[in-house]
Length: 412
Image (cartoon, rainbow, N blue to C red; front, side):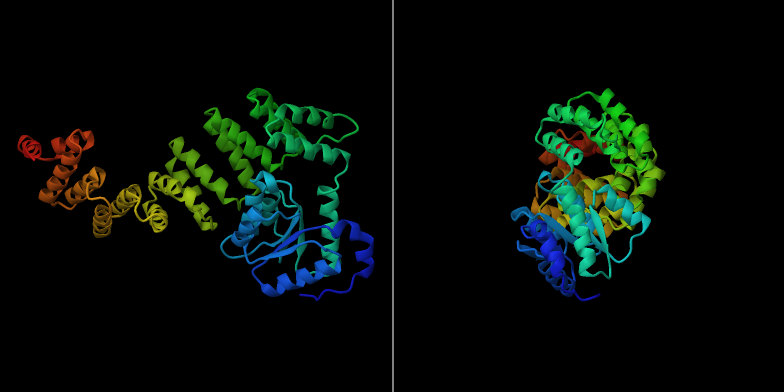
């Protein structure tokens, strides 16, 4: 990596733009962070220059302290640059914050997935201070000091986020007429506003217009898929998601969503393919979505993957009976009977009066051919909840001496 050179002329010419900036530098290599900080100082940045080791640490900082610009490496542990970019764009506070991505290579797939999350520019390693200056100047002028048309678009975005889609539409209508050039993002945002107002027909028309202008505008395919899914038009939703996937195959969230839709439409084999690719591409489910994801993998017949996700969730919430219950099912489906038994016994230590755990324990013992233990587990489940329909039905269907078995249960 080249060392920063003195840029006195650049500092004086752009000082009015760079001086007030607060910049967050995100890179897992301390040497790169130090070098970027030196370059920023040479370019005349007098504001706060923060540092973060990865995307997780950066987001912890950003939630508490606002920054005007983020300069971030793409490859980092825990949360990489793309993950941080998506997290920021999903938050109204940072939806339009200038984001400069640092990368060692710019492949088509990486460019596509970054563009989808609305990265502002790239800085290719190795770089000099002049390259950093050029990229910063480009994105600052565009985002912080936008032209008339771009300023109107950004204002429309803010109005939509503020819950005023009707006012946003008034600005967007002006942008569809001369002297402004018709852009896909204008019609896409108009579609989002119309959808927020409940006018799905006109929203769909705007989205289609956006695709006509730019058939590679990924955000519109995502919006069309969401609109179709909301209306129960799942085959069409899948079609638009697959179009987006063809343009940006590294988006793991979309792969997971495709898997969900395939399951909903009865296409289990296709669902397994998408869900497997999602994990292969390195998708990490956060704590709030991991259990839901585990259920999807279990539903798809991918019990090994479900086991892993349920286990990770239990590490975060070790007293969650539902997680023990579902993990036990995933283990049983893999014929891991002893591990399932251990799982249910741990659950009963958390709550010795869980009818559902005893029910599943009864099924496990039945699968192992231990009918006496199975019946005993069902008796305990029914003692806790006498009107447990699934337990009563199982006993009636699977035990030969049904009358005697049920009488024994009732006597208890």
